[in-house]
Length: 193
Image 1: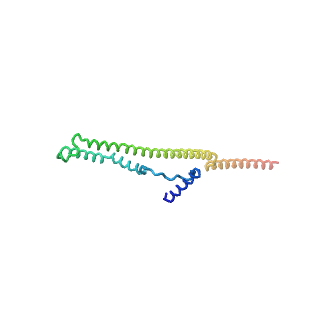
Image 2: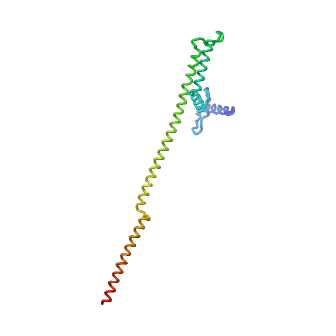
Image 3: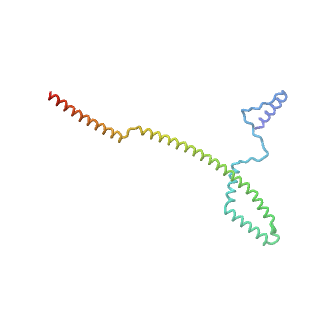
């Protein structure tokens, strides 16, 4: 909000207080963002950073570097001249540094695991929906194939038509032979009469 807008808002509030009107809250308009004393951060960026750190903490490179650092630390604080030692035995500062590293590593690893669980849950849900669609498609195709099979049972095939035509030809030949014999008998009767 600009200075002019704040001044006009203050004047409206004073005028409403003088006249006894209550300021109306508009429900169709979003509220102006409030200022916060807390720092603002992008949760996704923080989550991505925590995953990168967790990935690095789970590598052999991290273990090698941590081991080298601890060996150098202990060697320096045991064998260096007394005025140059910064952490005398029993290495209180080293213990503090390792505890601090562990106290930050554990929540970052948990955050990375939670984000991975969320991604896995979404992936499982998508897989489940895809499986349901595949099952529905398979059932549909099965019904269609069954309907085609039933329909094909009633459809005349080439072999069936061929066998039916052959049967008709035989039947016609038999009738022709019978008709020929009948005509011969009839003509023989006529000749006799």
